[in-house]
Length: 182
Length: 89
View 1 (cartoon, each protein chain N blue to C red):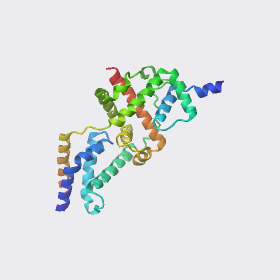
View 2: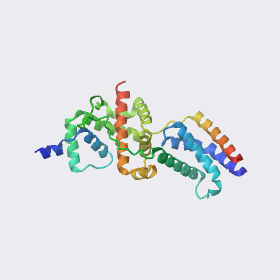
View 3: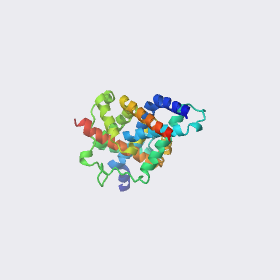
View 4: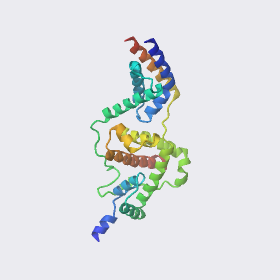
């Protein structure tokens, strides 16, 4: 037991930061990410005899964490795959609702170098509902393809595309409100 | 003529869907035509289209989450404490 404790203690010191960064790229609630990382180490501690040594400790920890995140999504979003309409942006005829109409962002070429724009985008991203946040993070930050994201989160491909589309409608609306109108 | 108009005239909602789709996969010839006619006539959707391109690029370049070092140390201490109590069980 003594060796297990010292191995895990070393792993906690060495890998907590990157495990938290990874979890935070998938799950936006901070308390939830901390719990996921903590539970990963507890599972690793309890299962240390099962560690085969055929992958590095780091890979092993990440695979435990990934499973925990998948479980988290399955549990958290069970039965919540409702249709996403985007109806708050469009009226019954499918036209933009007046105050949701996209206005020009102006000089788009230089927006990407504008740190205020990027900060606002980050804040807007953090305000996305949990599942949309996860999908956007996995798509853009981890650069996973649609199939892998669907598999990991247990989504149908139609629902996945609705989530992406929906997230982008919301991001644009949020940017217009918070960046353009400042 | 009516039928042709129905094919040509997209709602903004549908146009926004095509704009999203276009960033991921090639549109069919009909879809391309529908979208290009729509965005020529509709300023809001034409704005939407250029914004989505920018947002897409910005997300690709800048999607990191901020993590705080002090919080991380605190979490390490918590985890070690928890592990210790697990070990004593």
